[in-house]
Structures are given as C-alpha cells and as structure tokens.
Length: 338
Image: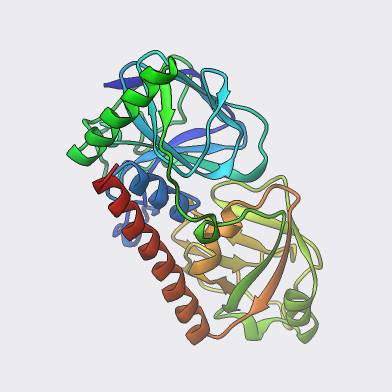
C-alpha cells in the first residue's frame, strides 16, 4: 500500500507528535506545528492520535494513491480536491487506487494535515517518525517529500476497513473514485484560522530584566509575523524590546512557545523545530492551548499578546483537552456505526 508524490508542494513533511525524551541529549522534539489538527485527522480515520501523517505548508502537493485508502484532512483549508472535484475537510474520505489528491489556493490557515488510515509505514527514529530537516532525521530519509517519492502505508484497522467498505459502495454508486463520509464533527468544536490573533502568554523567567516601556509594548502593541519565519521560530515585527541593563545570560532550557528577544530587540517565538536551549532572554511563554492557533497564522498576520497567570494557562489547557476528548468520543461512536 502506498501513494506517490506527483508534485511536492511548498513544503511537505512527515510529522507525528514529536520525538519526546531526548532534549537532554540536544535532540529536539520537532513534530506537527498544529498538533491538534494532526490528532483530529488521525482520529477521523481510526488511528491513534500520534500516528505519523503529512504536514502540508501553504501550497499543498499533488498525490496519486496506488491503492484504496481512507484519508482525512484537517487544519488549514488549502482548497483540496480529488480528481479535480472539491472535497470537504474534517471528515473521512475514501480514495480509490488511481485517484489524485491536489490543492489550490490557501483559504484559511497555513498548515494542513493528511492522515492515512493505518499510518505511514516508515521506520521510527528515536521513537518518532517526525522529520527534522536540519539534522536529516526521521520521516522519509530525513527530508521533505519530492516528486517521484513513493510513501509506503500500513494496513488500516478493522474500524477503518469497515468504513472503507461503506464508502466504496457510495463511490461506485456515484461513478467516481472517491466518496466522503456524510458526517463530520460539529463545526462549533473545530478551530478557526484567522489572520489576526490574540495570543495568551505568561511572563517568562527574564521578564523582569526588561524595561518598563518594553514590558508595556509586549502587552499593548501589535506585532506581525515576518516572512523570515519557519518551523524553528516565528520572527515578529513591531516595537523593539530592550533590557533595562544589557547583560549576557547563560544558556537555559526553552520550549515550544518560548518568546525570546535577541539583541536586535524583535521577539522570536520558538516553534516545533526549536533548539533545546537558548541564551536570549525569555520575556514570555505562550500557553499550550494557543500554540495550534499560532501555528496557523499566515505570514504578515497580526498578533497581540495578553497576559494570563500560570493557573489560567493550566485551566485553558484543560478546557482545550476536554474539547478534544469530546471530539474523540463523538468520532469513535461514528466509526463504530458507519
């Protein structure tokens, strides 16, 4: 079972939820930029949430399926189509052998996720199939997908196979090589992708070292996402942030969502491919519940930070996970009775 890459798109990589447990050896976590979207895409095809799928950035690839597959798309709306016909996201879709998945102009968000029932049959590296491009680690030969690649897929589980049989009947009746499920999660429970965000954050360990004016800028002024941003870090444009008394710091641990301020004074938000330590002062830490929204912000998009306490951040994380759990339970019920 496999699919072939007819054209790779702007940046298409294999990602799961990351390579956890090796930061002390200097190996980054990596993984999906929008972990929530990947988790939901996997749930829609009956996979464990950590199953590796494809992360598609802005301009999606063109993919030909060599065998029948059950797929789901989540995250950014990149105008997906199968055999040239628009296909809806956030639901299971059967694609038969020979069908071609393609993408058009981005409508909302920056990163879409393609999950395949059964997952990708690629060897894990240090417990993860995530691609870390700078180190050439994981995924397919440690690199982004290229034209001509054949990506092997694992066998779908019994629930997915049952849904595939139902959808195959529908596809035959419609006389085409694909069919989508009639059901999808309640749109009210799905994330929205906007070009202007309020992002919640706690103060960072070196927040007190910044001038009062810079502290005010962080919470009161607007920043925009620079075109120099990538999976490692989002560079922000806006008012400069400066230390009250310039000084050198020892390198310290950083994580997804840490807001560092280099000497130039323009903040950098560390993203999925962030390094394990950094020597720049950490002015803030974006809360986990807002990382997926930030990952979908388009280049040039606007950000305003809002300060929350650690207790509020923990409560918002729990609310986010409760929402995912509600979706998980609803999807499981649908897959049991397709």
